[in-house]
Image (cartoon, rainbow, N blue to C red; front, side):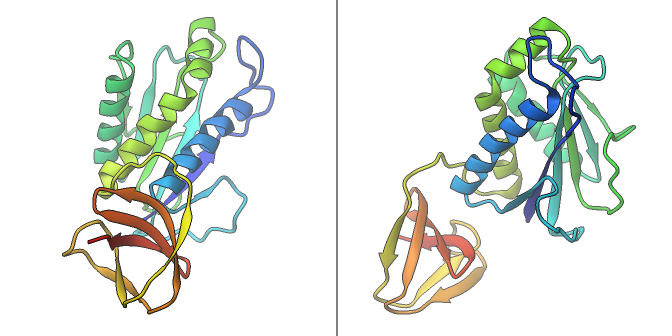
Length: 218
């Protein structure tokens, strides 16, 4: 499953303390992208790539602020469970955000396909308190979202680490998830190099010939 990230690119939708919606939403997506990379979750973002959406291969996630909301509101389409997980993580990270609303009505983005879609509005950024909250919490907002995605996809959430390259000396299975019963994505051949992206318990998160998966260390 691949994530499609979209920030509302409304220029001059100004924040109380400077900057605008486009600027801050893309800063959050920058941080989300880094965390998705470190967790081995594939994604595309905004309109920088020619993406052909397939209902069973993408989750659409967009970020907004504004619209005269006093609190975070999570809209969902074709997928309520992920919206509920995101709400749970936001409440965990931000104890003051207890009035987060979920809604399947009036989804703000024009989504034609039937793929799962989430749209998060962080509130009215023209208000000083909300503008300040967004600016000061971009890192934790990003973590809450990516932890939710990882939980939804049943993969570990991993913080960024320095990547390295490993040469293997026996044929090695690259699995879809860190579980010996998981689907085999590919078998890496003897004497070939594998990029180590991260580590979770006794598993390496690896990239091998553009395929991202897990390799058992034991």
